[in-house]
Length: 224
Length: 224
DNA sequence: CGAAGGCTTGATCTCGGTCAAGGCAGGTGG
DNA sequence: CCACCTGCCTTGACCGAGATCAAGCCTTCG
Figure 1 (spheres, chains in turn orange, cyan, red, brown):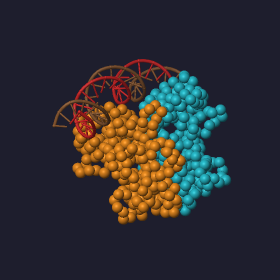
Figure 2 (figure 1 turned 90 degrees about the vertical axis):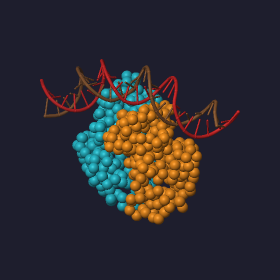
Figure 3 (figure 1 turned 120 degrees about the vertical axis):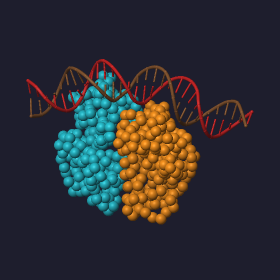
Figure 4 (figure 1 turned 30 degrees about the horizontal axis):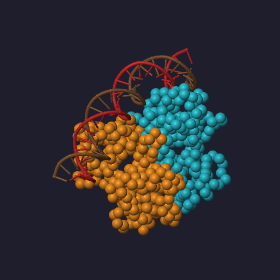
């Protein structure tokens, strides 16, 4: 989501609309959610777009065999809920405490995009960015080895999450969520993390914060 | 790619611009490719969009461990090559004989989109459609069982490829391509197809044409 | 006719799924 | 305050699906 670098898209704004000044508060309404509560569910009418401001959420689909596939983790700055379908194909549930989103009326955004070409360019860039993310996630699932997927996930989180002091990265989601994201078993996630920890590639502070100790070797274990 | 159903997007055109009458020949130039030749390669400048008219192509990325991940198969009617990056992150190579594409200048399309809102809506719909396809492909890779992936692939091809007489579906790509698309070994693809054939779920006419005999059971074996 | 590439089948081995159990932290109630 | 419970995380043992290695068949092409 490097929208801030698009020409003509900067404007003085409170830092809350992370990198997307075009999506100012006046266009939408702010909503706060509890952990585990749903922003929307599968089959709901798809008539809003959302920008996540704080906390974290997961976009997931239920599969026929009972498994849950997490399509994406939504972090502050991410726009979601856009698309051409009339109804939701996935549900979005919060995984972080104090998750705040701004909600925009879909038809309003669509007509704004037609009127304001600068906004249209911004949104287009966001959409292309989300396609890029989808593609790299597909490459992640293409990795056969479980450790490779976990390494790719850690690298993705380190890139996307805003770093805390000293390079500490937060994992707002549970091991179960990570497992459903990478399409491997929880136990395998746990074992992979243990392996990486024991080989000094990463260290953990609690279970939900990690730090990259050996970036080279983390990248080497991840395919691409 | 159900672009033809978007309001205001129809216009009398030769059938070659499958369902996307807005992308008329006057906007681009027609190019023909040999089998296995590249439309573009990774790291090439990304200054054209393409519409595939006949034949088939694969969009693939080379991974660090030597494996090749096929991100998408491109079939007649598919638009590809759009995005916000300045250079290609994948290469596109033809897999079908007589592959023909129409090539559009990127900056020209971008300014046309700003001038013509109807075209902009069409392109947006195409882009959203390609996001949908990416998502369902991700669910495909989320399936753990190899047979499930193969079933999902066959269903996808049956939907996307134009049916020939009597429900015969062509597979323009090799088993190796299918393997790299589903991220499983060629041998596993072959074995899965053999299983499905022996259980009367599908039949083959040669190695590159199949027919769905038992749709219910094909769908049942595929997750979702 | 031979060579090459694509496809299939068989045999073996390994990684990760599954089942089971236990540790740990946070929350609740006595 | 402590005991208990619950959910999350980790570790161990076992087993099976699929990767890998190997070989053979078929079609195509020179």
